[in-house]
Amino acid sequence: MRPLFKLSGTPIDWNELNSLSWDSLLETGKIEFVDPDEQSQITLGDIGYHGHHPTYTHMEIHPWVMMGIPASMVPYANHNQSARNVFASAMIKQGMQLYSPSTITSGDTNFLEYAQVPLVDTFVYDLLKMDEQPNGVNLVVMIQSYTGYNQEDGVIISKSAVDRGLFRSFTRHVNVCELLGDESEIIVTGEMFDETKYVNGIPKVGGVLEDGDLLCTVVDGITEKKIRVVKCDKGRVTEVSHSKRRHVKVITNFHKYIEVGDKVASRHAQKGVVTIILPQENLPFTEDGIVPDIIINPHAIPGRMTIGQLLEGLVGKDCSIHGYTKDGTPFTADEDIFNFKDDAEYVYNGMYGNMIQEPVSVGVVYYLALKHQVKDKIHVRIPSGPRSSFSGQPVSGRSKGGGLRFGEMEMDCLIAHGASDTMHNIIAQSDMEKVGWCESCEIMLPISHLSCPVCNGQTINKEVSHSLISFSHIMASMNISMKLK
Image: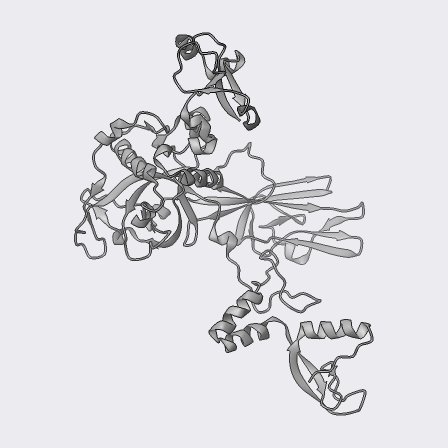
């Protein structure tokens, strides 16, 4: 839905409209929200219509209204490619925000520990009072190819900025333990006698849980049920609540620092992955001694046509020097930005000390830390990891400690490259199992059989896939005997 001025067939009194607030305009019916189905039934006048015209039923308020709330929060969005504004709308929703006690969390939720108000904002940003809940940081951005680590969408981050708390965050994890039936109870097991972590079998507030520590041990009659901390390295317990010992909820916070593999993005959909964190002394610096917080690749600008980010960097730099904020609402008069000082500067190589021959763009851009963090997505399985009882193969799923699926297409790629040894190793590490094999009967037997029960012949050991053994059992249930050639 989009708000529009509702015309009554009489000339518009602009003095009256300018004196009313947004809420008053809604209450008096001068502004009406129109959904896509209604747009075919109205006639829309251009902005600034003054006179009486019976043809028009509604009038545009401002061009940013047609962009939606997330896209309207992008400064100078009218200078960007339209597809970038669509992508920016999705990325703004993925950015981490500051934690608020009123925030409702029902699972893993990421929050920033420190954020800043943008130097270049928009009318919608102020209208929604986003200054009270910012979701990013103003960074000194340098657009330059440096060390080769910022190829494609890779970005270089300053270690000094990370040490000062850049994009430091925490994950709030809600662990719930349900007690089923009246006979269920929480017991204290041997590993829960650590008084620094547990009180009466429940984690204590302030205790630090490591990966694999118990949350609680519940006995349901005869069955013992254990709930362990997963999806984290370690965390501090911040809240514990239970209702008549029937329901236990433990909330833990896991603090994280930005690291290689994390994603950051500007409000112009310039998403990048941290490829290296360089010490400040190895980064380029300007004649004034300014060292960038982040370095992005120059090729990120021409193809994506995000000129709005260049303008934001230019204006943000002037705002940081003179100490003010600037309105960057799309489709507003912005001719004054061309009077600002050029943001291109000569910089010096931090590793060798020589001046780089060509000037480099240095500006201040508002960047967001996205919730896609490598610590939550990295996936590796140890050889002794869990396996499926039916197939004998590693289970699937990161939360279960499972393995990565190597499917039919991946196998075809190895065949095309002639990597037969690699293919054999992958198959052998999956579900290979030793069985007994009778040379005369050619039937498979358990490894414990030293002789064939059918012909009393000698058996030898062979390695076959566990899936083949499972298939032979299924065939045997249908009275079909399989032989291994």
